Length: 325
Image (tube, rainbow, N blue to C red):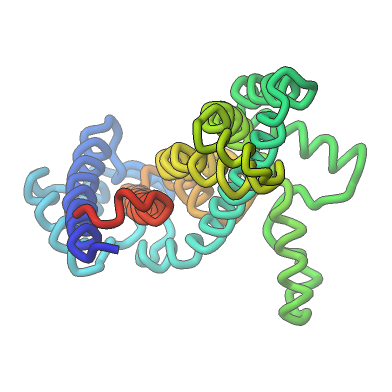
């Protein structure tokens, strides 16, 4: 791995994060509405004197460019501000919510890639077979069905018809004092439905993409050479073909990570999953600007990190790129 490549990618990521911070601040502050009114409403009244006092306390009465400069300077020192509604540091709120979101998003990503690629490889063995037709139909349905609808249908199914999985929260209250192993199993039990709901649309995409990539690779000369040498079908599929077919899948996986995070907002709301998506939803309703910007900042950071890891994985998977800077 070329160190200069990694350093340059990290530099690009930091510049991108600065642009994200500035853009998020301007878009949110230029949106209609006054957070001082919302804060005063939570206190039970909204006199003009109270509004002016709130604006002065939170710095909302300063010029926009001054507020932007102060916010960017604070972010660079690790200070994301104080939540208007929760009366806690935004960094503390996000620290309490980020691990459940990472668990949900990473689990959904892993499930969608593993199952989707497996289905695509099996379908590519017989392009005109039943499995190939199933993958095509499944991919079409997966694209068409909204993620929140899937979540609601799963809640109805597993809450009323087949009460197998819990349909809300991350842990059972009665097991919070249990051992670590029991608690871990309980979290996985609660994670099953949200992760599957978030993964299904991307699972369908990876299945179709891997099928198309495998069909293209299986027609290559080196595959015909491997067959002529007597290599087994398993070896041809998983050792020779899949490695080259995986390159476009890695690219799409990195690009789709941002969509997974945005989809997590809906899934966490439907299943009452205690992650950043739920925090963002509550903050938007209350015009809690610092919390919204903090959530967007961390979500953007996760996307940037995922893309850097994707670039590194791509170079590891393709020997032709390893020596390039």
